[in-house]
Amino acid sequence: MTVIAIDGTFASGKGTLGKGLAAHYDLPYLDTGKLYRATAKRVLDAGGDVNNPEDGKRAAHAISPNELSDPILKSGPIGAAASKVSVHPDVRAALLAFQRNFAQAGGILDGRDIGTVICPDADVKLYVTATPEERAKRRHAELTGYGEVLSIDDVLAQLIERDTRDSTRAAAPLKPADDAHMLDTTGLSIAEVLAAAIKICDAVLET
Image 1 (cartoon, rainbow, N blue to C red):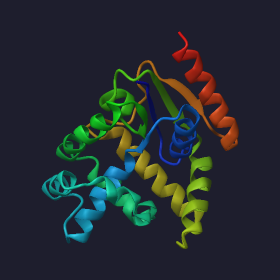
Image 2 (cartoon, rainbow, N blue to C red):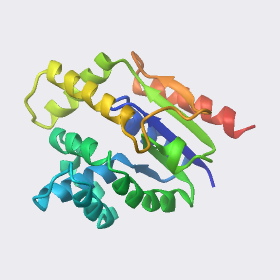
Image 3 (tube, rainbow, N blue to C red):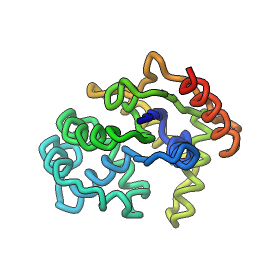
């Protein structure tokens, strides 16, 4: 049973890397951010308030795996709402069991507190980041690809706001685990990032 934890900043390439590692090592993959996006969507669909902990907790307890494939979860508004609902300790506690149950059989998990809270005993821990400008460029391309209309300056401002919220929240703030391997993806292609990550993972797993 191998568990690889991938944490890092928003739009740093965690998801693409997670899928690539899952294919390389033939392991299941979980984008834990989708749990919070699905929770936020549930709150909004019910006419609730993502800033209300009770609304978030109620939605988090009702999440089912089939909700995670909904394409709307990738949208900008849902992402922004997810960042707000994820600050609530009760929401994070409600989704903790889902994530740990997934990891019990081995797998790749990406998020913001995988190596620090969800899987502190993961075999390999990676912390992925890139410059804000690089991440804003990637996110802008993704959102415009979905048909959303906004400037790259707007995306950068939202990204910086989200970074601040994620890193300063009281519950499981975004930070590298003490034993995480840092991976800066700025200026690297998808293939280069994957190759660098595989090199790290192989070195750790072979020891």
